[in-house]
Length: 170
Image (cartoon, rainbow, N blue to C red; front, side, top):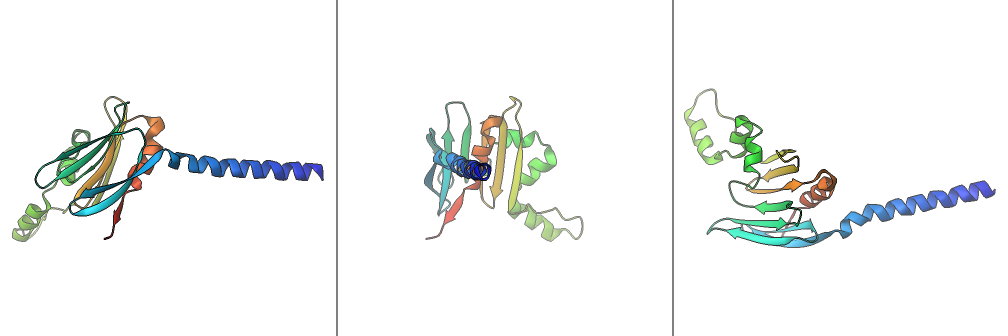
């Protein structure tokens, strides 16, 4: 009887410990609201950032920079902060990611065969930089979200952050 009771206490302790640790990374994240392309987004980013905002008359980009040089971005710019890393994946991937879809559609209307593939609405790319840090870029129609200069131990936290992106309905 004592063994069963001890085993039950042990299982409860392990279960509650696992639940507590599962919620721990969320405490490291802060929810922010961002305005991009006339839409409002919510993104949970790791705490301790310095926010930079770059903009032109038509485009805006949010950069969440950290002391270790890692960075998360949400951007409406045509070219993203990971352009150099994407270029290292090869010309075909680079050309697809940064394709001028409107122009390609016009060209395809003129072609009868061998039409150029149109870029999909969502493209996910990732890799290891020359400095052995990690990067990731996700293109979602006309915006991109991603990170770069992330150490391997922080990849899960940064993945959780960029996957938290949600468009808020008005």
